[in-house]
Amino acid sequence: MSKVKADNIQLEQLADGIDIAEAIEDNWIQAAGVKEITPPSLTVNVTEESYLDGDGWVEKDGGDINPGELSVTLAWDPDDTQQSAMYSDCLARKKRWYRINYTKAGVTDKYYGFISEWGKAITKGEKINRSVKFALSGPQQEAGAPA
Image (cartoon, rainbow, N blue to C red):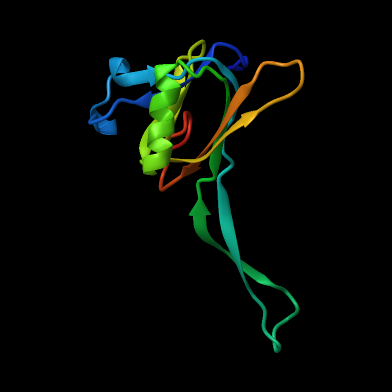
């Protein structure tokens, strides 16, 4: 098992009009100034069954799968065309493919969803950051996950 160091990791989005199945490396547009990425946690809803005449044990089954949220922190740059394009996508509630590119490991996680939060983090004496959250939808394509 190889270990992946948390550096040289990029957030990228798939260019307009490109199908994920036909995407090539040149179709991915890098978001500038990525400071932090928090990948989503996939969760499976749990349903429980308990009966009055049962043996005292609760039966549990897996329910719907929630792909979670992807969170990123970008260095705020009001002149960055990529950040402007992402903001337009947010206002349009546009679903799109995004990926986390682990460049040193040569693998990617691909996520489909829309931007659900768009904000700024402002701390006295620090640089202003852009906080962005992506609400994910449907099956995702994580590196190392069975196809």
